[in-house]
Image (cartoon, rainbow, N blue to C red; front, side, top):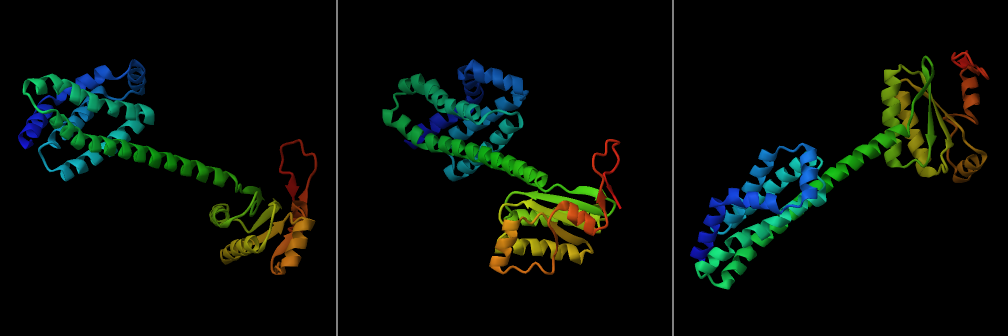
Length: 290
């Protein structure tokens, strides 16, 4: 049996170029058109296919654990290559699905002539099928990881947009906060306010929380941490936009806002700083003046 597997394995390795061409012939035109439009180098793609076929052949007569590691590495490289040229996951997996068909079909007639037992082909399948499954799994994981990375990048960008720093005059800026504040967002608010405070050389930041639906113990604690961090860098903070119902909740919970400068509205916060809003300024000038 080992000699039969060695014979088949050697034949697969010797004919890897022919088998790679067979795969190209079997793949449907829609996939081929998609691949051609992606700009993926055909030579490199052909080499990838030949390499995997070679590993399948070697698995029949060499150390299978070593070959499995090579197949995993191949899956990572092939998936990275496919992602680089915007090949969809479904198309990438569709191409891999043809390897089994090609390997078995090409040698069916020759195996009959050699009078190999039917169980030989079963043994070949038992060796190659798990490797194919591993390829599917690895490619899927690489695509999933890439998808998660893109989602994380998009989420981070969205979060940063949710914490806009609005310069008012030299040394003063406002950060309107809309939506719930959790630990992650509080950390982002702190990071952005510290970075922008330093970059813009700010002396005061007004945090308008009129768009924050709930201020409970956890949210208040996060706000205090942000104010403390800013204070350590020499930046004062004013909290504006605390609505009546929020103020009532703060009192009920016993939260101490005595050490925090507050204002009912953004306009009041500006007044505390000696600034006045100029209404209906149509000249494009700064609508805030001292």
